[in-house]
Image 1 (cartoon, rainbow over the protein chains, first blue to last red):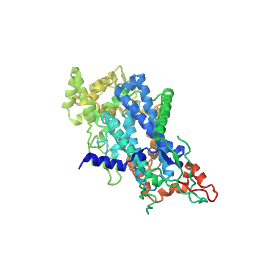
Image 2 (image 1 turned 30 degrees about the horizontal axis):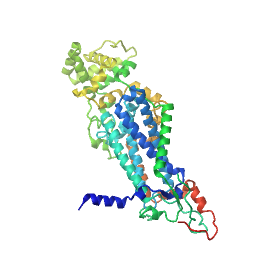
Image 3 (image 1 turned 120 degrees about the horizontal axis):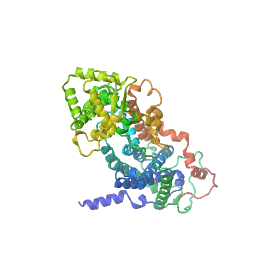
Image 4 (image 1 turned 60 degrees about the horizontal axis):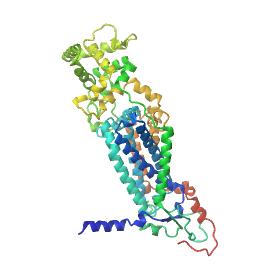
Length: 213
Length: 337
């Protein structure tokens, strides 16, 4: 058995290119709400880029360099936009019933990405090496300790928090977001709920493409 | 009851799933490119205009300089075991002071002392032993202290605690000024530790605990400064205390972790502020865990998964679609592709 051939055939069958990168979508996706997911992914990409530059400079670089502080500001605002757009995306998908028609796992991977993003951001906050990091770590320790997690997830241990922030959590978030996007592409975008009143004709009339985007 | 149409029924291909709906041309790569560009421009503008917060860290030296007398009192409490940290409980000590449990459910106790901290040894005696190598009077004081009984320790520290609480007690130029009394070697030790704090040497001594060169674990140093007035005052001024929605806030006027609003809100309302206050952290963690699980399982939860259909926000999101399909059309119009 040729493992490579088998893998290629499986991937080609499960993830055909016209589904991964479709050039035609249903007209109902013409809503600004659909941009929220894309903004979230864009902000995540900027978070990674600014974070990589920050860590290249060293953990305390941004305290002493105006360039470093600028990249910290990019990281900070990317994170704010990331969470804002992700939460709005989550609520919008909730109110659109986005789990319908076999899309439960699209919902689950999206919610997991949101939930894992919270400790990802938290470990960044406690790795800032400033007063904010000190206070957040000291405030948070009691909650982790109360749940019996303080010994294995020591928020006062900068080395552990930084390692989790720059490697572990980004990896998990990337996998979840990647899985979420694959789910969206493989299953397509969920239909709108049925209309209130049935139209005169059973189905919408055909429309020509309304132009590229 | 699970409705197959809502959860598990799977359409094989999007093209099949979209059948009957009008289609439009799409260019995902172009959309991603321009969206990323727009977000980049926005982020750069926000970074240039608003920058980002960076309030410098609080050193042990700063806490000592801000209030030397409070520093001396706090250090004495670490030595005599009266500090809250000594009785905190897991993962730091064997105490029960901060242990939270709901009935028999006490994961904090079950987890045990994973990060042992002995405040008297780690925060006072060990740093003093290092300093004593170049301070003969301190070395003598330490020898006397370590040779004395626990009862004698208690007498000395108790006397000094009372003396430090007197209105005329103070620290002047590094010298602790108290009324004459039976303090044994403890006054010498406390004076030395206060001066180590004032000079900044204690930051290094605590950070370099256990003779390690590289340091990335700030557990001891942070626990040491956690009781300082400096930290508490700064946090209050920045609205970072627990009863000020602190977890959501940020130093200065920048936005904080707003996504934690639900978790933070629990600490502002009963029963978390009342009958559950003794185990508020554990209750909040469990509550958020349960709510997260519910959010995750929405597709399978009857009632919750029907909320969108009832509140009809989707009508706003897909308004163009509904306008089109609900507009009466002339009979005979051709059907969708």
